[in-house]
Image 1 (spheres, rainbow, N blue to C red):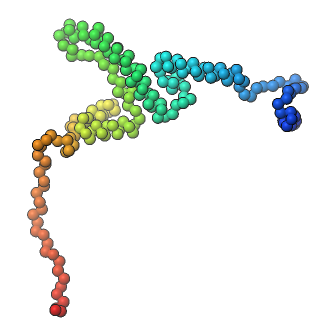
Image 2: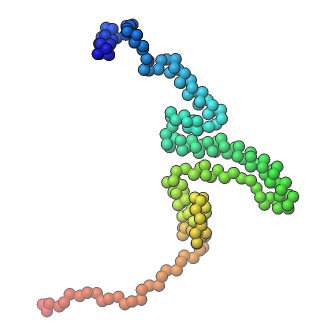
Image 3: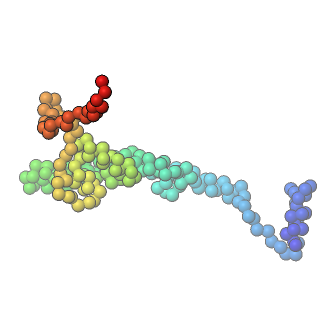
Length: 199
């Protein structure tokens, strides 16, 4: 009953006028004021600036205001190629120069061992794109079945080390495979209509 009277008193000509609460009733704000709204915008801006300084995509710090599935996937690839890869190369170079190289020289191994970060797992993408890429590599002959299975952390299979080679990519002068021998069975005689006896 009180709320009905309050709404009625706050409509029409009294919509934007000052109101007075009686009987010790306290007012609780249901929406954010301008100061708090500005603080939230400032907080989001600072998060984006921190991500920009450290070359981290916004979704890595849980800022998903402008993130969609395809956008996040591309940002993941950009993060590896534009931010991580440079640091990984520096680490590899330092390890090979100061750790691996002295060990190889001491054991007479002549650079048999080397350090390398495998970032392929970070660039794998979604399942459909990965399998389409594997199918392309398999059909064109630069990956075997076992190499593909190794990338997917699967055990090798028998006969999985062979490579396919498309027929249209054979070296020039390669003889085509022989045609199968023709069928030597005699052909049946053509069917003829019975003679009706009329000339």
